[in-house]
Length: 53
Image (cartoon, rainbow, N blue to C red; front, side):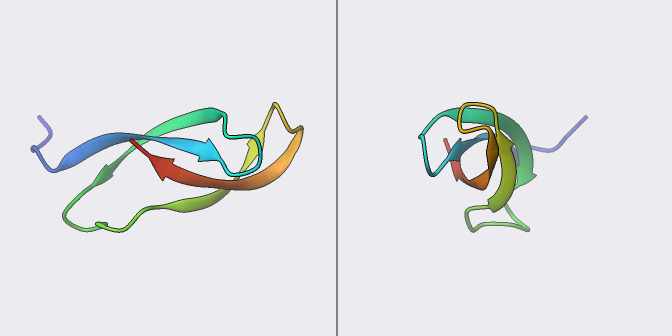
């Protein structure tokens, strides 16, 4: 079983503000917010996505 340090978060497109992806991370080893370049199906291009709750 996973320890209580992992949290589920969503990734939001910074251009159109749609929440497209969800993932998990270890809060202890990665306390800062994650920024990734992912494909947004609403913008139809690769944009920067930022972690939200």
